[in-house]
Amino acid sequence: MSDQPSILPLAIEGLSYEIGGCRLVGVDRALITKGRRTVVLGPNGAGKTLFLKLCHGLIAPSQGTVAFAGGIKPAARRQAMVLQRPVLLRRSVAGNLRHALAVAGFGYLERRRRTVRMLDQFGLADLSDRPARVLSGGEQQRLAIARAVSVEPELLFLDEPASGLDPSATRQIEEILLGLHADGLTWVMTTHDLAQARRLADDILFFHAGRLIEAAPADRFFAEPDTDAARAFLESRLFW
Amino acid sequence: MVDSTMMLSSLWDLLPVRDPAFFDIILLSLKVTLTAVGAAGLIGLPVGAALALGRFPGRPILIVIINAFMGLPPVVAGLAVFLLLSRSGPLGQFGLLFSPAAMMVAQFGLVLPIIIALSRQTIEDLWLEYREQLTSMGAGRLRAIPTLLWDARFSLVTSLLAGLGRAFAEVGAILIVGGNVAGFTRTMTTAIALETSKGDLPLALGLGAVLMALTLVINALAFAVSRLGARFAG
Image (cartoon, rainbow over all chains, first blue to last red; front, side):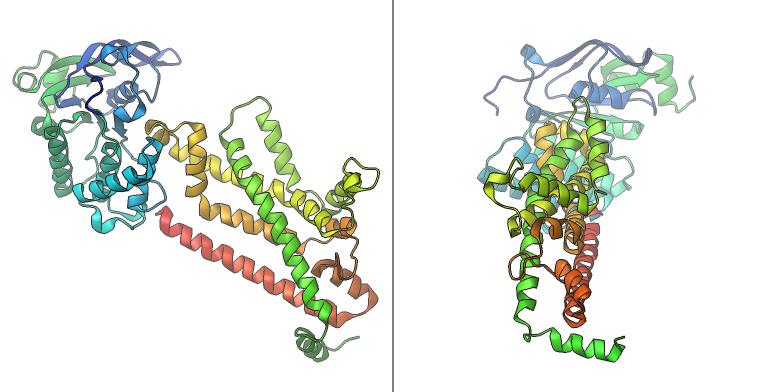
């Protein structure tokens, strides 16, 4: 798929999402850049998940645009998302991968080839025939990520990919994400975990009360945040 | 009066070969009901799924009507098929009345609403759970149907078995459209009805026992399938 023109950067302009006249997300301007690890940071209820779903196209904005490079509307498989609570199908581990590949339109042989490769790459080979839904939380999350990247997207959204996992499973997920980035995948993830954001981020998009209020390279954001809300969040103070 | 030990021993004596009609009756029952339920499943499952995911005006009314048809009295279904297939009816030219085919049609009509209604409910619940995930993967509603049918497979088999149980036990519809012709359209239930009123209790009891055993097997299967399904549902 590398012969196709890139869908990045992703430009977000004047974006807002409202329900019943109540504005839940507002983003004046944001840019997702190719090759950068973007972390969407903010407390619970800041609008991170909605922002990700708007970018991914799961929900339609009330106003504003989410535009991929060159104005192309990419095929579903070029940008994928791992939901906060990924729904694994009532099939085996391998069956989940094969299904995702079938939906993306891959032929039989290619599905088999990629399934084997994904199982190996994500350490799921021994679990291949297990019903996906009886896996542990960490294994399920690994399968969810494997399923999303099996179609070789250029851009991957991850919503709290390590929430609810123990420290070692969290580390495993973070290492997978760094490895995927090294292989050329651009990803955007949300987290409310400061330490995780420090470990993973190139760029920070900081949300507060439904608005994107700071967008900066990670080192600058952590050294000298521009807004009081960000400062308070970094110091784990309450800020209303 | 028939004393119970005699009933049991005559039952035992009668089950095997002695009456050649016995096996013909069982075989015909199986053939009619399995064909009817098979066809109803083939059509009812995808229709149920389409009804679960479809968006069109009148959908709620259609759902209520189909749900109501689950309780359709078999004799009424039989009457309707009778009118349809009788000489002067719209399909009279095919001369199907009082044939196994007519019985299949009647049972198909009885079982179809059950399978559509149960699978519609199952698929709709599952769609609620899968919707966001499947949409994210690029699967629209149409592409979601085979995925949902497969992932609901254990519940759907249970609804097929529910249809099977109803069809096997049913007598009113097939009596009307089949006519209970010996050796041609006589099934277990119609034979039991006839033999009991004739006073040939041993044959009626033998067939009754087979029918009970069949019901038991169907329910055991349903139970096993749901246990199996629980393993995959996690």
